Length: 285
DNA sequence: CTTATGCACGAAGTTACCTCA
DNA sequence: CGTGAGGTAACTTCGTGCATA
Image (cartoon, rainbow, N blue to C red; front, side, top):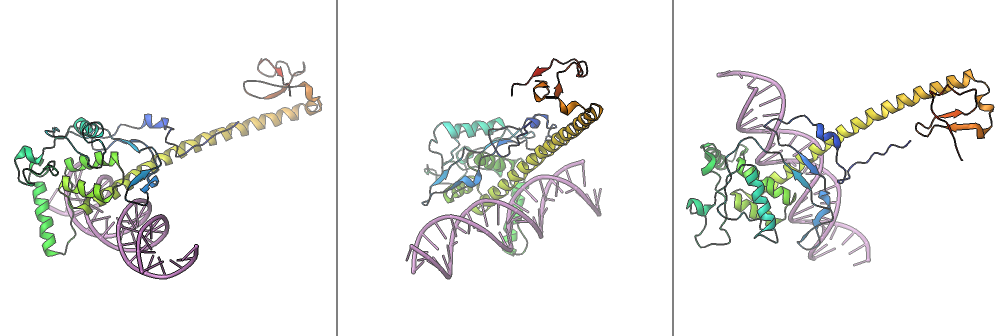
């Protein structure tokens, strides 16, 4: 008998995940194929290459959040095809999560020059939050900056988090340009984007570790049970041998093996009826 | 070619703050 | 209202790879 244990193969799904208890509405559901994050690196220049398939990260819907509406295309500047494909996918992904984002142009805000096409898509998160919470946080942060004493603790809005999540699905690491572009679009500091991605990778790894741990636990239980069964079978065989002193003296050609359970038994008339009525077949080798 | 140095980045661990039950 | 737990933004430390002198 052989037992194979394979870990880390993205092509293998963990079947027990299907039995994962229902997540609460607060949870981000997780279903992902692990790619090798370390496989994505700069290739000497400033280009990013990946030797592995992209990490597939599927998030279950969040708790109810404002409706997403795009009046202009969501752009991921690092994507080759910004007009269709990936950006559309990201957009629909956000829409599927029930998020609303508005563009600066939509709100008539003056965060970018009116004729600036390059910066035409900038998300206005503070206004659409439905409360002054975000504004207060920003103000508090700026106060802290002035005081220079306490540590800033900005809570990202749901929209910002969702946007970062979508970006993370595209790339779980950022090059400097991606970081700057994201920061610009989200009205965040590049450092904040960088930190968010670092923490996000850490959370992903932690989740995967938990999944692996659960898988190993189940493997351990299976092996323990199998070991118990084999021990019992060994005891039975020993008992059989003790009760039949001539058992081992039989010619080898008279040994038979049950094809289903692979238990060795004798084919002589002496053992007939003691094998549970199983048909015994002589082994050829 | 080898070595030392500085820089940038990510991982891991920790801290501090916030929210919620 | 106070409190503890959990989530997470921000920070610190360390290791690694790369460019350059």
